[in-house]
Structure formats: structure tokens, C-alpha cells
Amino acid sequence: MSEINPKAYPLSDSELTIAILDLVQQANNYKQLKKGANEATKTLNRGLSDLIIMAADTEPLEILLHLPLLCEDKVRHHHLMFFYNRQQFFTIYFLLMI
Image 1 (cartoon, rainbow, N blue to C red):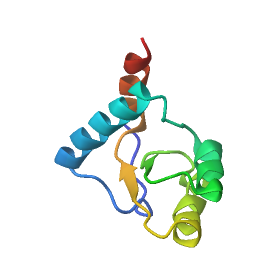
Image 2: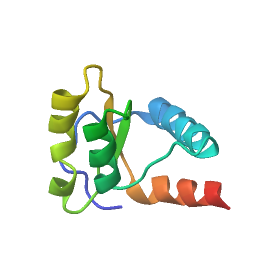
Image 3: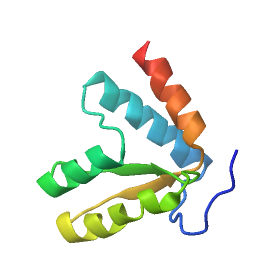
Image 4: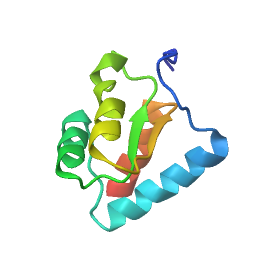
């Protein structure tokens, strides 16, 4: 696992991580899950996003750092959370796709 950048804030704890993974599974079941920084930017600009989940070990993290600012500008009630481990998230996501 790569080291977590101190710019990645707020980080989810273990209980919240489990809840996030459950939410991702539900969103996937309802075909509401978007993935990638470009898709997140598009949904924020269109006002469709309620929750943005980002991986804290993304390299370089600067790819994602525009999203918190966009959340503050575009969405009145935004929810933004950094997920610890990108590999764990994508492993679970791809298992859901099978």
C-alpha cells in the first residue's frame, strides 16, 4: 500500500469504510455508480452528485484535489470522503461487477 498523503482529508475510519462499501454496492445495483475524476467532475457540475468518495493513496493526489473545491462551489450540501486504499476499493468494485 502506498503512503497516504496528508492532503487527503477527511479520512474514513474502519466502520465508515464498511458503510461506504455497502453504499457503493447499493449504488452499483441501481446503476447509479460513476467512477473516475472526470465522471465526478461532470456530475458535480450538473448537480447530480450527493457523495464523492476518493482514494487517499491516489498518485498523484493532485488529480483529485479540485473535487473538494467543486463540491463547495456547486453543491449546497456536499459529502466528501477519502477512502484509505484504492486497491481495496477497486477490488470490491470489480467483484460486484461479476
